Length: 186
Image (cartoon, rainbow, N blue to C red; front, side):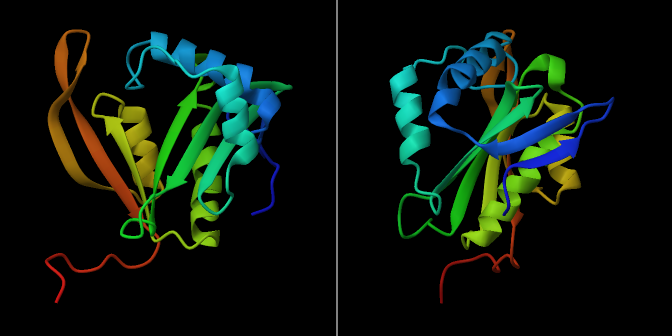
């Protein structure tokens, strides 16, 4: 998975997808704080980790267990994504994915570029299943996930409250090799 990778954006310009670096911590925190303040896309509305904690997270990440990505446009980090392998032997074949892009940069192909890099990383490190959760109201994100092969596996009814209304959380997954049949182990 050669990074950085620069790809054209819809509407002109290009985005560079690269691994997050410790010096990106402030930008990531500012972006997550801004996106959280929208109260529509992230579970949290307030990012509480410190700059030092985020710097250490990027610096100390084991590349076989976690991926932290930055999307950079004209020298500015405008979004990011992360994928983290399951922490236990029973779920280490899975990784959970998350993405956040500043409002002014949505709809330009950045999310797809980030997700494609995450899928390539997952394959390279032996992940069998990539998972994510998305609010049912985030139709643009759901369309992207479906476009890249994710399927809905579960729906948590009324799991979140958005603007005073219950909204489902949709749990989606992309199997990177054939999904096993369901049922208890033999």
